Image 1 (cartoon, rainbow, N blue to C red):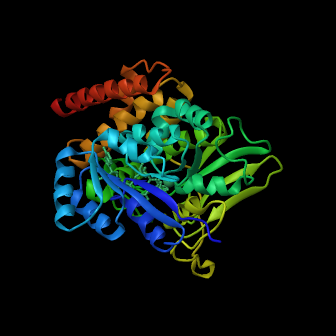
Image 2 (cartoon, rainbow, N blue to C red; image 1 turned 90 degrees about the vertical axis):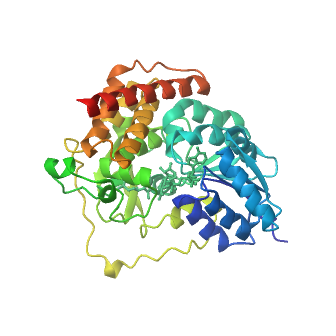
Image 3 (cartoon, rainbow, N blue to C red; image 1 turned 45 degrees about the vertical axis):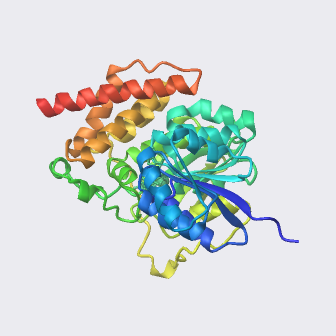
Length: 400
Ligand SMILES: NC(=O)C1=CN([C@@H]2O[C@H](COP(=O)(O)OP(=O)(O)OC[C@H]3O[C@@H](n4cnc5c(N)ncnc54)[C@H](OP(=O)(O)O)[C@@H]3O)[C@@H](O)[C@H]2O)C=CC1
Ligand SMILES: CC(=O)[C@@H](O)[C@H](O)COP(=O)(O)O
Ligand SMILES: [Mn+2]
């Protein structure tokens, strides 16, 4: 007898990870059913997805956009119930009927809905790295306390997860025995070979043109500054209970080798594949089983070589800032993330130049004490304060 299909809630359905998740789900209708689709405000995109997938619920954070979606779906004869607001995101993440929650909202906006899924003990497929960067130990404590299952979707963390002994990966709480260090690969982004003068003139259109991956605008800019690798270093610290000084970053411009685990005996295990997020998404969905992802297969005879080099923290200081924030502890990583979100948004709106992103993050960190917090709402209050300080730093820079 075949098992009943898993019920999936997809947070961030209209985004890059969200749409690629639906592509994978479409290959396996016997294994997965969509229970809820959720996004921020782009109701037309969500409407199309709802008409195709007929989920029980559709949720938009934006109330006005939810009204438009409700009217549209009613007129089209859809039975999908439309909900609005942050509480509704948490509701569909925690609903009893749901087995798996794909956490693919971008930024700290994903903290509360993702934690709702954690507290309901769901199987969580985590793309929303910022949720972990912001809440860190509170997030991992909740995973353990509520018996949730956490499977990484981020390509590097999926690679590490696959290279660790099966069944012993996150959330272990202590570094795995026998593991010496983790090696995170970085593409180096679109500006890998650019000098300081070129970086000062870099435009948003150039920054979002990633050499290997097709992704949303925020993470694409993070890749260009190397803040993405900084956020991933913090993400790896929490997921694999590794201190920051046992995680190295190595630039690998081809993005074919997605990260590595070095063991005490000198063995280094790596996971390889074409740069296509459908592979880690399918891996997380079916883990420990393996299913077709629809990704193009890796043709070794077509590879022109795999290159590796050290990251340049002079030109790309965000990686160092992230490592230092992790080592500082308290809520420093929440401050780093909040300032980065403000600065990236300003850069995308052409209100800040490219080097200004790292500068605003550094100045915000310097202006805050970043105390340790014992609950998530207190961390989110620090996030809020950091955003206000980052905006003040932005205004100071643009008025001088
Ligand atoms: N794209 C990729 O290849 C990878 C992404 N990730 C991570 O996955 C996450 C998503 O990235 P990506 O898909 O690129 O981002 P996108 O910008 O493409 O999509 C973001 C999604 O989040 C939704 N969203 C934004 N704000 C809110 C909100 N306040 N409440 C509810 N939903 C909201 C958007 O809805 P709307 O469309 O309505 O605005 C959209 O569905 C990020 O944390 C990123 O770092 C990790 C590895 C790879
Ligand atoms: C696909 C994925 O996981 C992204 O986080 C990707 O790694 C970004 O590439 P960079 O290595 O350039 O940050
Ligand atoms: Mn990644």
